[in-house]
Image (cartoon, rainbow, N blue to C red; front, side, top):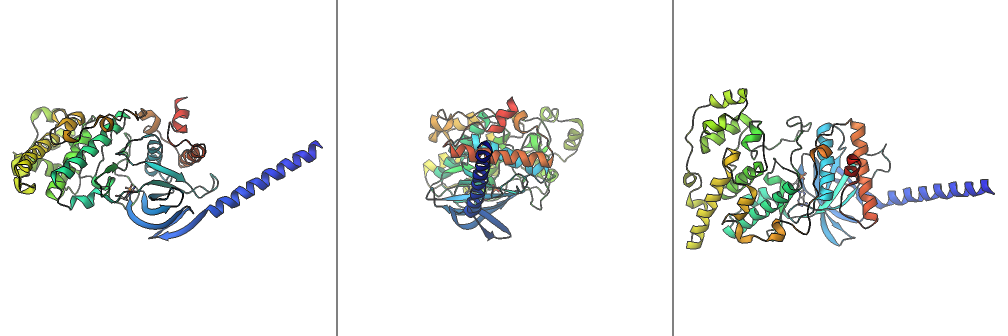
Length: 405
Ligand code: AMP
């Protein structure tokens, strides 16, 4: 009796397994998008390419379950090398636990492959936005819209900082907006131990928005992200990239030509070889902010607008400061007269959603083989499936809990 009962159980298990497998196969379909093939759950229909980045292609789609449009990003073999793997893992873990209206939210994660051995691609389903900031930069914005976009960037950055994430790589292509002027940050920037410059894709990394302390390899603090906000604000006003360097050297030239050679006490903070290089550049006096950002760049048809233009220029002059110790902080920027008109404590302090603190050790200081990365990323995908099955969408990811043990 025991043997036949065991036999029945094994048979039932195998049948169940085959049924699940067949069901899973039927849940997916493949469609070509540009040079790539997306294999997605059938609930996602009407896929159209909307963008591409270092990690791959992003599509818009209609989600029949949620009855709304979504964005789907395909990460192709994200474990293929250290750089890709670290970024994909970091993004997956952080997106799962950060919850703020100015940071892109994750709606679903899946892989069409059925086992770890077959595992290839991860699909991230996110809220769909209308455009990235590169497209907005072309537009003539009034002060209301410009200051509201900046306010939201600062709220998102403040929330990231509260979670222990200093971005260091904010740029217009990683910030998305909707036509109602709402804004979200798309990614989590550079890992502290990121192998910059060694990215093994033909994709060109944009470095125009990186702060002097990143360009010059110095230590940095939270207001490193204010520099990028300053560069983005300047570009929205000028409709031209502020410091369009071909490389870091050219970029440093662009910075000092406009802002002037920094003072001796800044140079003393550089390491010897960088200091020698910086000291040997021609000396520049730089231009005043009135010259760099003259009135004609701002809407100025009323007294109200004149006041706003001078406030905007004042904010630019406090953000675009080479020496980070003299640069405005995120909190100070949120209190600046150009920005604080929008101040809402629930958005700024996000009291209802305190972010979990994520330390470097848990994420950035991880070195793994390709096989280990593959397993770690696969586990994060399965963990998502498990948690959403139980109706839990956000919370501490399984892997962090494991690392802490
Ligand atoms: P990424 O691979 O995250 O750097 O995204 C590349 C581009 O895809 C972005 O610059 C956006 O133009 C677009 N994009 C990514 N995610 C979204 C989204 N959730 N909504 C709208 N567009 C997006």
